[in-house]
Figure 1 (cartoon, protein in one colour):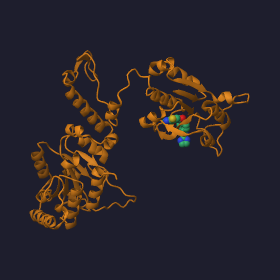
Figure 2 (cartoon, rainbow, N blue to C red; figure 1 turned 135 degrees about the vertical axis):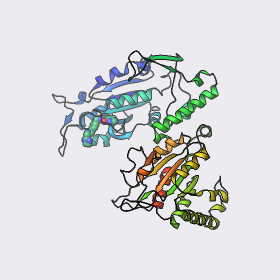
Figure 3 (tube, rainbow, N blue to C red; figure 1 turned 120 degrees about the horizontal axis):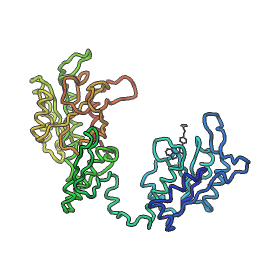
Figure 4 (cartoon, rainbow, N blue to C red; figure 1 turned 30 degrees about the vertical axis):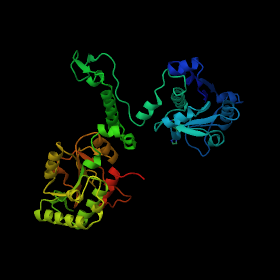
Length: 447
Ligand code: 21W
């Protein structure tokens, strides 16, 4: 594969490609890298490649004529694929690298200054690529990244290419941790340890077991857990395989409990009150909970008569509705009824779940007020689901009625979901609307 880099700073390209895998591939003639300098296509005494921007503004712009001539000379006829490295390009991905690596010749055009004259892009660039959302001083490092990423996919460049099988298997997940000898590493302890203090770090025993199935399972589990913790965006896109499902706790929705809290909540004046149950809230959030496959929906009020009313309404509804006629996979009519539950307090719900699951729930609050639950870690729905997916606990999501959960009276809360915001300052969603939006953000499937 041939790379031609168009740059006014060739000395930035050359030395970076003499060592390592790419250096050896060049020596072996498997790839070639050359540079073309737009300065060599100027005709004035100062070899000028830049000029002031039309319309004013800071900095300089690469002028079109030398750049066009250099790209023309680099690309040949018919022209090879021409890539401009630019902060305004599409993000470079491994998928794009795989496609680019199939080409026989790639021209990489590097901008300097504020950028290049737009007409060069119109006339002589096939695609614009960026490395990411940070500011570099030019395109040269981008060109080096493209060369390195492509070269290692060219047959003959890497000694033993990772099997396509293994690559596709791990695609979309972060790598598992690697270890080599010694099995017991004795090393200086990191600060704040005393000088001279040492720490002994062992290679995980499973890797020394010789049990290849156990090793593969451990590595896969590490990949899944790391991806969930570090890259919730990747984790959200990952479709767990059947084997993954065995390594992970049950799906988060299957162990998520929604609680509609009527006490302790604020009234409009900030006083702690107990609100009354409403028919609509019982119905609508029960339907939303079942639609999104939650484990249960809990109506929380200390008022005994209100709990009895809730149970009565829930039973009537479940008798009448056509929902249970086609019960969800895990549930009969009785199962559906069991999914609408009542409790006198949040603490009671927590105690019930702790007994049922053998571990206390991760309690998640929602709030329309940005400043409530001070010190409690904030999570986006994507972050929360990724975090919960690799932990064993059930999830208890609290929805406050009235003017919201009385945060200082609910110390069990350990995560907070950001408020749902519309496009105005007026934020008074009904709790059942907020709950439905929240469930969709947590568990909804994009079409
Ligand atoms: C950086 C040129 C910033 C122009 C709004 C208006 C190539 C790059 C580059 C550069 C600006 C890549 C401004 C990630 C990168 C590159 C040089 C814009 C400020 N903002 N990938 N003016 N980041 N950068 N100047 O910077 O050529 S690939």
